[in-house]
Length: 266
Ligand SMILES: [Fe+2]
Ligand SMILES: [Fe+2]
Image (cartoon, rainbow, N blue to C red; front, side, top):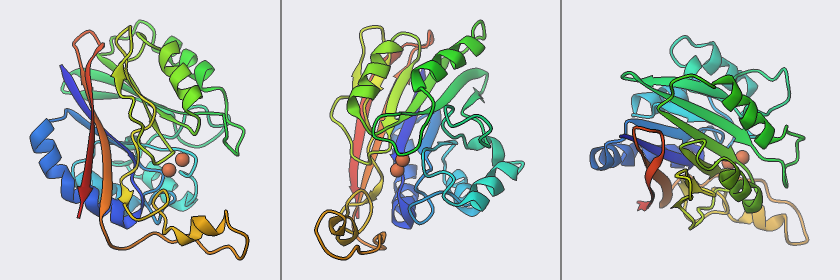
């Protein structure tokens, strides 16, 4: 049995602080073997810094996936990748254009158990032209064929529910879990698919509760209402919505259980 605790996009300092506050009790309660956070919005809502990744690692996060905003602070992400202790803890979507820095998959050794973590990004409603996540996943599975893996965990970073659900069914039985990130809104469809892959369209964010996707409402509202655009700002205080998902994986790599965790952190 392997238990994995996954967080979606953790947004800004308010999100990081709530995560660090909640993590000890979550870990005591659920005893995960592996805790993964999507890092794309950690630093001021976009990108990462080395000190933030180090702080979350010290706070109990084992590994980081990411998404379209990971290069928002290029120095920050390269500082992480250049660091001998942190460099191999952060991946970016595997289907970013060829030649992009970083890697999109990693095999973690958890006391002898091998876990392949894969990060992919979807194509529908995305501004940048990313590669096909389905083809990229096939190539990754082909590359690891014959390797003894105890679990395969996929963070599928995307906007459209249809694309992600189709992905889940397409790879059902071939990976242990497919859980989504990027929309910052949790979906209510956690389930074990017929061939025993754990699936959730989007985990949802850990970020300010009074916000539009983690940002003070007035900025996003101004993009939809005629008038002047108000800059995006991340709230510095207030309650935080914490969204996570707990997945239990059997010794044969199939998923036994998937459970959403939703808390309000004051
Ligand atoms: Fe995000
Ligand atoms: Fe994103």
